[in-house]
Image (cartoon, rainbow, N blue to C red; front, side, top):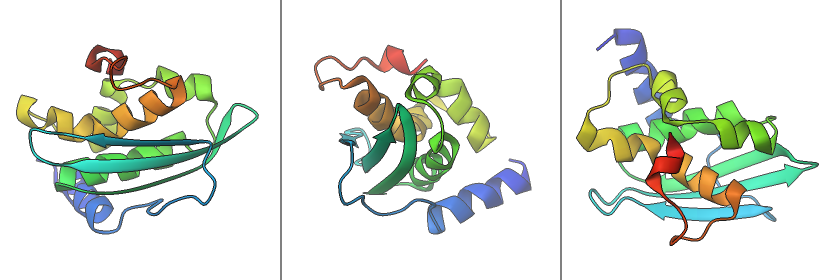
Length: 132
């Protein structure tokens, strides 16, 4: 694994950006990875179809926490349409390392919460294929 990406992941997992909760979020969503127990809660503040603020809390492995931290940095200031267009390849590119099949759900947990929130989907409506 490239040392820069390894250090970046460790930094984001130990010192997550945009950590916490918003007082009055427009969208609030929680997701759980039942395979490993990782859990994330994401709050979005959307004004005029733009994500003006985002926060997350949760617990889990370094990959899930780092990916959520990096993703919150990526979506702040983007339009809802741009956020909806983000796919799993973009998250994997942010991480910068190969992620095996068993860790893929960890890496994409934040994306799943954010996409479900901006689409207003219920658990029954959310399909992991929409993360592509």
